[in-house]
Image (cartoon, rainbow, N blue to C red; front, side, top):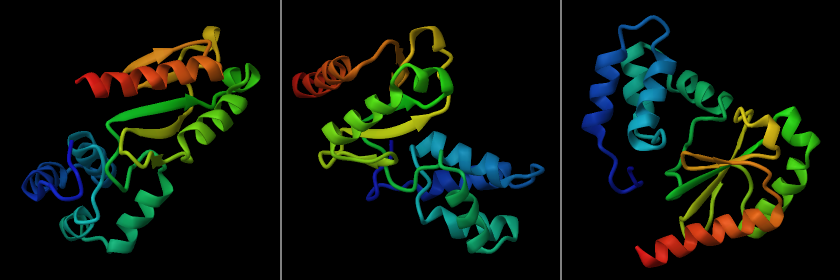
Length: 162
């Protein structure tokens, strides 16, 4: 994963060159960059705009419209809280409020220590075990505030022991 100080512009240029000829290339390029680096750095915008003959504002507009694109490096762990109807019916809004307060961040933000980015997700396919969250690539069901705290404490403990 890249950080703001280690942006691999060569890799980004390679992605842009590889995908520029695709129909509707902007979204595939943005997804590929984020898949490679974990985010879409500001430095990528002019490269994309020039390759696709778009204005920088057009590229920025797409980045702003789709909330899944990160504009800053993510934390070392991504915690997503499901906001689908089933999870909402089972208390995800209370869980969201708790997560935001306990981590001292809002959605699309990262904790001050860079450990955790908090993001919404709109269905983890775990409706029978709502409310659900995903931490990195692992889905957890029936998560209440105390289980959330235990899971986050576990992440932090892993980092200390690593």
